Length: 473
Image 1 (cartoon, helix red, strand yellow):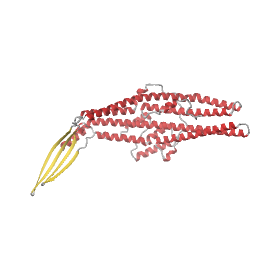
Image 2 (image 1 turned 120 degrees about the horizontal axis):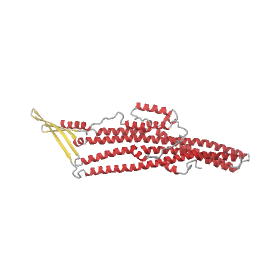
Image 3 (image 1 turned 180 degrees about the vertical axis):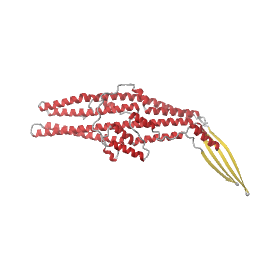
Image 4 (image 1 turned 30 degrees about the horizontal axis):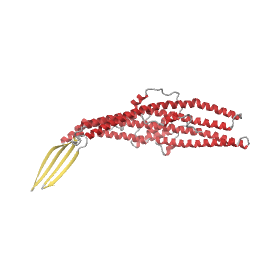
């Protein structure tokens, strides 16, 4: 038995037992969030940490929550992200376990008969497990490192989804604000036309057109309010808020367009080097390659067990009792004679090649995502700038001239209402174009560093005719 225990301790020392980190492996995640997101991340591991996080979230919610604050609140308060951090902690336990020798088996056997009592003790250790401990430790380390990049990916994904939710919520709120003003104008026009009709200076046709315009704008406003509610709830879910925190405020307008955008560059290479999900896949592939090598090296022997045996026998002869002690070793070797380990090796090879092909497929997809993301980023910017610099100024001129000509009795009510309807659609289209650009910017950034694919419909929206997503009139 001493031999078996000595082997176990020697293997543990040579294998280099790993110990648990103080933060559950969060150090690289904290560093990545600080470097790429300029935000803090905290793993909630108890009531004290939860209280600190809650105070920080309450402080952020005390004022209208901007884009950066929304991301910070989500990184602190989103429990889905916390679950991903727990997955990292689980991976660390697997790594530490992989660096430890397999626990020995202790068995005790008691035999009685013909005045003889025999007790046998066995301590069995798996020698194959001890011999491969170093290699299994290296595999566990690669998988733990990959889990760290998965946690970084989850952090980036949460940040990106929060940005998208915030942009959609604020854009919807801005649309509601504009349509509320448009409805007031339409209501005033309908009332004026009704009074002119009562005085005999407006026809029934003009009154009906003005009333219909008011009703249509009211419907647009109702739809916009519904969408704003849905988008705000999506943001609330990302922020992890409930109860008394639901009264948080958001800005009433989207940020202005930047004066310039990023010029074309070698974004594909950057993405291949920076994408955290691709780095994690590469580490997983390294672990699979090591597993394949281990499987091939041990294919002819599936188990080697060494047992230390100690037995004590008591024999009673009349009034005399004699005791006999025996010690020894037993070696068991299990050989897969039916297939000589071929099935295990083939399975390991196929698993490894499957991972290789998946990795190549992902690299191709990432390059495509980057190209698509940049095209959408530039196109949506050009569209938004066109709304801001050309369409809206021209619409204001058209509206001003239409009012002047109507007052000079050169145009009828129908022309005036049509102009107002087209102006409203252009303003709503401008808000949506600014929203689409901001969403495309988020998608492009996530295509470079990881954190989930972009929203595909943006490309279709960018290719659609300008103003198609407006009031729809």
